[in-house]
Structures are given as C-alpha cells and as structure tokens.
Amino acid sequence: MRILFVHVNFPAQFRNMAAFLGRNPANEVVFLTQEDRPDWDIPGVRKAVYASDMNTADPMGGLMGNSGNAARNAGAAMRTAVRLRSEGFVPDVICGHSGWGPTMLLQDVFPEAAFLGYFEWFYGSDSADMRFTGQPSTLKSRTSVRVNNLPIISDLLGCDLGICPTRWQLEQFPVELRSKISVVHDGVDTEFFSPDPAARMTLPGLDLSDATEIVTYATRGMEPYRGFPQFLEAAVEVVRRRPQCHVVIGGEDRTCYGSPPEPGKTWKQVLMERLQPDPERIHFVGTLPYGQYRTLLRASSVHVYLTRPFVLSWSFLEAMSCGCLLVASDTEPVREVASDGHNALLTDFHSPRAIAERIIEALEHRDSLKVVRERARQTVLDNYDLQKLLPRRLALLGEAVRRRRRGKANS
Image (cartoon, rainbow, N blue to C red; front, side, top):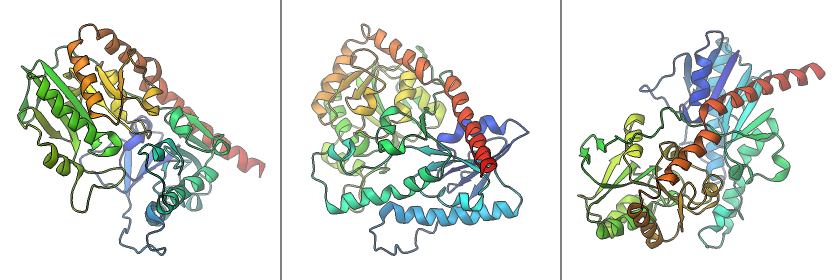
C-alpha cells in the first residue's frame, strides 16, 4: 500500500503509524511536511518537504488570520504533491492533520486516494475555551474563530473517515459534523513511559540526585493556555514554604497558542521580571530529548499539568504512564481522564495559591498517595496504551481505503 502522511510538523501525531507502516517493505510511505528535521528520520518513511511562503500578503488585510496561512500552506503542499505525482507516487490513502491547510487541495491532486483526516479541534466563539477567561468576545475574536474553521470544514466534507483523540475534543465539533469521526487516541508507549523508583533527577547541567522533593512541569511552550503563569507563581510559593523543594521546568520559551504578552517579549521573560524566582531552586532545563524527558517524569515527586479547556497534551498521559503523582487543572479535558483523589489531585486552574496548596499537600502525603500514582498508571494501561490503539487507527486507515473504493465502484 502507498500511504501519504501530511502534517506541518514531522512526525507529530503520525509517528507511530508511520513507523509501523514503514517497517513493511510492501508499503511505500511518504511524509509531506513543512518541517525538515534532519535529526529525526523514520526507517522506511521518505520526507517530502514543502516551503510555505508566509510573506505572501493576506488579500483580506489580516481578517483571514490562520486561514490565510492555511491557504498558503495548501498551495505549497499542493505543488509538492504535484511533483510527487510526476515522479510516480500516487497514494492509496492520505492521512493528514486538518487545520493548518496542507491537506485542503490534495484530493484534487490525488482524486483516487482515500482520505483519513485527523481532527484535533473545532473552534467555537461560545466554546468553553473562549469563555474561560471571563472576557467578552469581540467582533475580531468571533470572526477569527469562524475563519479558523474553514480548512477544517473543507477537510471534513472531503474525507472518507476522521480520527479525534479524545471525546472532549470531538464534542467541540457541531453534532451534524461528527458522524465520520471516531475517537481513537494517539496512544502512549507504556513500556517506554513506565515508572522507575530508582530514577534520579540528573540532566545536562543539573544534578538533583540528592534532592528529597522535586516538583516538575513540562510543556511545549511556556504560555497561559497551559497555565504557565499560574504555575510559576505557585512554584515560587512552594519553594518559599518547602526549604528542601526544587522545581524543574521543561519546555521552550515560546507561545504555541494564543498571543504573547507584549511585542518583543515572551511570557517567561515577563514572569521572571515580576516574580524573581530563585535560580538555585527553580530550574529551567529547556526542551529535552525523549530519554531525558522521561527521566524528568520518573524522578518527579509531584508533577503539575495545567490546561485551559483545550486540546489534551500528550505530556499528561505520559506522566500518568510513568506513575507520577499529578496535580492537574480541574478542567474538561483533564476530567475526561482523571478524577480528584482517584488518579490525580485536581485544582483550580486560575488560582496560583490553590495550585501551591495542592502541590504541598501532595508532597506532605506522598506515601499515602502512592495508590493515586498506581491508578494513574493503570488508567493509561487500560485506555491509552499504544499497543491497543495503534491497531484501531490502522483499521480506520484500511476502512477509509475500502470506502473510497466502494464509492468509486458505485459511481
């Protein structure tokens, strides 16, 4: 079978599917992406990189927002797809992430190919995410939400089947658009992300192997969507009250979702100036390779995960799989997986004081909360294990091909 994966980032949510299919010499697997990562290759998977011209003017003067970028991505991905076709590669199935645009025009290049869409989020001007700040919506925010959905709606209409990782995320889609979409999570490698009671916090430039209390936090970007401002304020309070406690923060100093605090500054910069965290006790370790990231989780006394009512991060489930004692935001995506006192300790996202109190509670009662760690691990083994979910995703890939072929036979 010939498979074309499509994502602006490589390999993102398709890493495990692409790796599995690439191991079979009977398959030809191509990954169409905007991100050329020479440091990361998947055996049996060929990368086709497109360059989106983000300098091209938005004909609607900025009103199109992310959809303007999506249109530019669509054009760039289409041109690369035309080249692939001219070289003889015609996929049986396209498996692509919807929302950033590169999948929008590929069915015009490959009309014979089935399309399995990955639908992560549908934007709503009155969604829980938009209401979360308590600020009234504006005309600009409402129009931005509407146009952000244009590439998603286009892919929903054109796909044979769709995948969404969680029930909460599927519920953001209008009822009338859900019929094609199945809820199947990306899956967690529970053998890799497993507990290790002997783990010690030893990372490049940081040796906390003798520390008795370590609070950890890991994020792709240090930003309000993942509660970074509230966490850092809580961390300052925790180390003030717990003289033996260290805090280790993994992630990039960037904004992935939402807006920066002001032109030319990052959220970390603004918060560091305001909070003045103790560098001897609060440690920023940057983006970590997988092995070191796992060390951070395994050596954690308490791991903190915060999110607005938005997409659930992989890191939450990976921390659970490592048997972390989790303090997490009491928000909808978390509540789909965790309940307070059962497999995590939930807290008010908005309140640094409440977050700090919950962290201190967890540190003080670590021994009696061991069962919470065990239940966290078991939750992932039962419901999010890659070995159980990968076959379901591959089955949907095959079903999309069969539906497309039946449709062609009946036309």
